[in-house]
Image 1 (tube, rainbow, N blue to C red):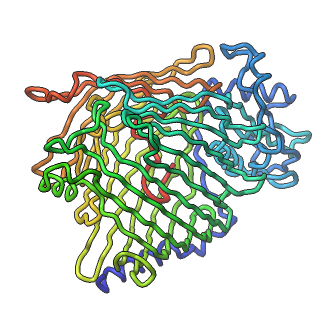
Image 2: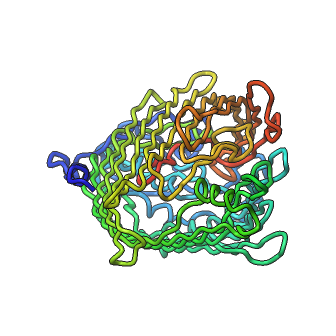
Length: 590
């Protein structure tokens, strides 16, 4: 790496890891909030009435006389189900709810802390309604802080599937209890069925392990080949982490081990795609990774996190039965599609600086429920040396620099993101990736919201032979899944998401969309994008989940003759909205 490159990384690290003198812990961030939905507001009004009080519109700075929890079961009188079903559900325990409230009796009420308390609980709790509100206290200068929650039905049989004209391509069946004994602990068993394999596994997840500010997760799965009935792989992970549970937390740490031993298959229309000459588009991969890190966090309104960590990773990839196919075709397939395996052992240092202001909106990713999005700048810089002397496959120095900026547009927002990773060996730049994304979410109109998103990835150096795949249920609906493959990719989506209509407390919505996207290996002249249009439905049942149930019907738009492997229409059924916000790499998120 040149001296100029090293200097650039060090300068970026210095900038993002230097706390602002003017920003002490007493400087509060801003919390921009919009109105509650009619569904949520009725719950808040009913809670205030039951507690014999009313909302205090001037609560800021008053003395907190009590911190209380008002907990609702999944089924209320207004819900389309008998109340007797609640007897089969364990309501979240009071101490679990109160654990997240960042104010205590005797302190001064601060709206920003109330909003953060609700935001933290929304981040992990399996609940639909979560609101931290101030009620009038016993005297004009007193206030009651009440956390209002509504459980979702935690013991469920969950499903997620993707159907294509060729048949089912992905089916997940899960029996889970996301609130075991009312402790917001998840235990589950699941199976994933694909055309050539089926996996079975179990998971345990605790966001507040033993009531502490510690996240714990353990998962294990075995993969069975459906043709032979023999095991062909496994995957899983174990994580123990003390996250920055509050924006005023100073220390965090984590340890993680994960592995994946599988046959990777590229499916198109529920069948393994073919490369050329009868060679199936698949390879065996064995990946294992271990991480540990320690984070020191500074500031409150303007945050700076400094992380020191270490990582060990080993990846092995090979094409099975390669000797049965033409050697030149196999070599071409390996050279253009199969990732390069290696071993890496390295330490890293990372600086992460961001504004701690949030915007709370509704009717975007979910329906009728509150959502939180961070505003302002979000910048990260990381540097890491990979050395053969400590067991790595090669010597290199890597750097990651990225940034994101978000502004509010009424009760919508605009977000731009750019992220780059560069890895340099003595004689060359071996890998370099540049990603960008622009997201525009319009304010709500009588018809709903317009959502525009464009994302692109350019791997201008690609020793590790990483690829992108476009097509299917998320980015290019209407085309077969993973239809376009290449080291570079782009996708553009325009979607109109309607306002929800509430029927018996269930939220119903609709969407109309236009998608375009592609993936390619060579120059920009080789881009032949696919286009599609379509429509779909969205449903949120607050008794079951805050995420949408999504169904989309997509129609590919092809000039001239449509390729024989592209059906005239595809249907995708899944959970969550398409191209969700918050899926940027690294620390970037909601």
